[in-house]
Amino acid sequence: MNRWPSAKAQRVLAALLRMGWTVKRQSGSHRTLQRAGSPDFVFAFHDSDEIGPRMLAASPNRLA
Image (cartoon, rainbow, N blue to C red; front, top):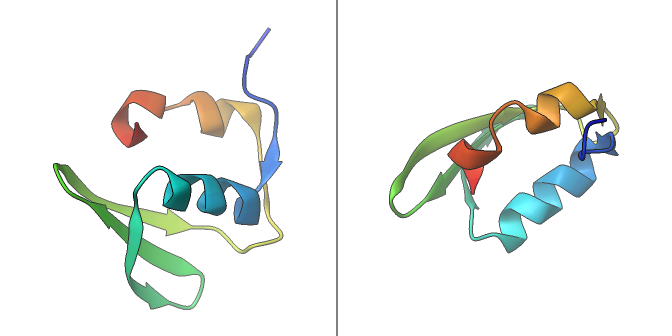
C-alpha cells in the first residue's frame, strides 16, 4: 500500500510553500518554484486537480 493518499493540487502546493519553496514566476497554471540548494521545480497543476498517490510518491526526495 502506498503511504501517500491522493490530494488536491492546491493542498500540495501549500505544503511545498510551507517546506520553504517560493513561487519564482507563474504563467497560467504553471508555477516555477525555487528553494536554496535545489534546482527550480515546475508545478504544472490547476488548483482543483487531483494528484494521485503515484505522482506524489514519484520523487519525494527531490522535493524534500
